[in-house]
Amino acid sequence: MLRAAHFCRTSPLTPGRFFTTCLTIREDNTRHTFSSEAQPLEDSADSDSLGEQIRRRRKTEWKRRQGGQSFLDHLVINVRGGKGGNGCVAFHREKWKPMGPPSGGNGGRGGDVYILPTAGLTSLSSIPKRIRGGSGASGQGTWQNGKTAPPTIIMVPLGTVVRELLPGDPRRAKDEWEAEEESLEGLDVDERRASLRANRWVHYPRYAEDNVNRDVFKQAEAALYREERERRWARKQRTLNPVHLDLDKLEDKKLSVDAPLGTGQKDFIGHLVAAGGMGGLGNPHFLSPINRSPKFATRGYEGERVTLSLELKILADVGLVGMPNAGKSTLLRAFTGGRAKTEVASYAFTTLNPIIGVIRVAEDGTFEGALQGVDVFEETIIEEESFRGADAHPDSSVTLSKSVPAFKGEQSDHETLDSDLEYRPGHQFDILEIFRFTIADNPGLISGASENVGLGHSFLRSMERSLALVYVVDLSQPAPWEELGELREELEKYQPGMSQKARMVIANKADLLAGGGEEAAVKDAREKLQRLGEYVKTNMVIHDPVSGLERVLDVVPTSAKYSQNLRKVVGLMQNYVEEARKINEQ
Ligand SMILES: Nc1nc2c(ncn2[C@@H]2O[C@H](COP(=O)(O)OP(=O)(O)OP(=O)(O)O)[C@@H](O)[C@H]2O)c(=O)[nH]1
Ligand SMILES: [Mg+2]
Image 1 (cartoon, rainbow, N blue to C red):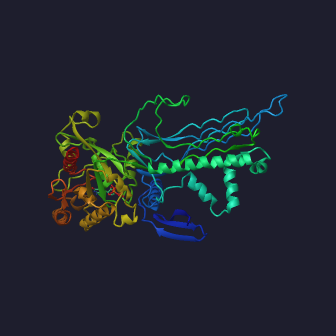
Image 2: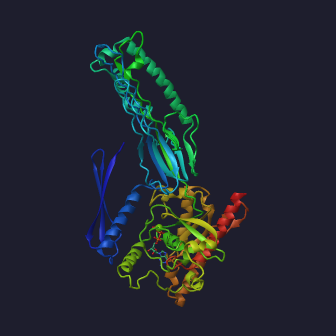
Image 3: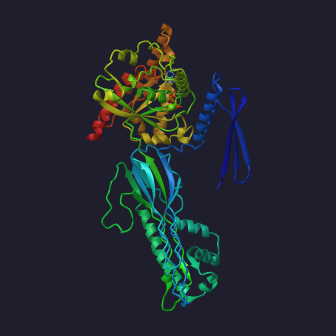
């Protein structure tokens, strides 16, 4: 196996220009270094925000190196039940009783590992990749049995699907028996036997050699292997019935009346995924008419080892799909009035994990996000700085809002709303709300994502169950239609037929084309939009599986930054969601 360590360092060359140097040390000690000049950072940035930019860029680079394997909606974890405690070899000692009976206690059971759906959690980020149940305590003299380890509970968010990975899956770790087999590889018969014995038996001090030559020990060993064969078979049977849990409800089961007494377990603590190992047997267990003084005991068994894939079903009704920097995150922020905390910045792959926002709509099509009073959705760093400035001077008039003319021909969502003072975001909106749906902002999808270019395309997993997909393209690009074709291709490569879920094309950043309102610019913008519409009409037709009819995607120009024309987008999205929900109900 080729193991490699990576060290990356981003260092300033000249102010504003940065070099990323990566050093890879392979297992065979060969070193591989490469440097790449990163995109220049903003010149105007002060040292604070420069540091912040470097931090963010490093985070993005780290995520890119994961090759699309580390989205927080999907996690593969290795779980081990706790090891059982060892049995004890001891003899009772009392005054005037020199040859007391064997009195070694049994080992305690290893801790079981449970998985419990929990309200209030939203991500899998807090779950470690390796989880191990506690070990049972070893037995002691005077018949003292070891304590059973307490259970370990993995708390997962509601909506998590848990699947056990089966043999053959490269991500699966070896189970307890396979791991032992692996450790014995390359040993000859005697070494193998010695190793197996060392893992299974505890001997009275200085009696190890004597024990292994005695018949009573050999009989006990044969019995142990017979029993082990049965347990091995039972463990194999378990793979025929692997763990598969769909944890989308809170469970409040009462313990069955048959629950063993003294488990001390009153509440439901979850679903058992890996049982702890049995404790070892103390030496009284081997007492027999032909062996009055057993000088051996067994060790505790390893707990079950399973590899689980945890998948968070993010059930967003609508998913935004677009190239990096198209403005998906800005759109989500504008739809939710800045409530959705998703980062916005002018470099590619700012968004590293899918993020969900809720859109609430009133009867007349007003959506709550438009009432938050934010007119301009700036980049996160700029917004943070403005907030800091406003905090420092409470009397100053620094606000995020600034008036920007709507791009010609399109309505501003805020202009129409200013007069409607009865609308208020927050709880007041509850009485007006007639429809609600969720929307997901995704990381950027680029051409070649299926070969793990960029962040790969595995984040689309959370979109599989979306009711509708919406393409977001940057209208200020010279040929936005080319982006569309690439996006569709990547969707299809991820899952054939997925592009059929697309319903709309948002042509964002329209303000950049005709924000000033000059006639020539407006004319150009209109022509570009028309060309985009024609491309969509001829190349992006989808076949509605229900009606059997062909369907043309809607094309809507918007400016996410200045919240323009979003009302129309929300209205259309509402239609798609209503339609899809109706079909799903049938
Ligand atoms: N002028 C203008 N700029 C916009 C608009 N929407 C987004 N931007 C800018 O475009 C840049 C990228 O925006 P993001 O929202 O981060 O883009 P994204 O698609 O989420 O990018 P990734 O997360 O990297 O995939 C930021 O600098 C935004 O301020 C818009 O409608 N008009
Ligand atoms: Mg983004």
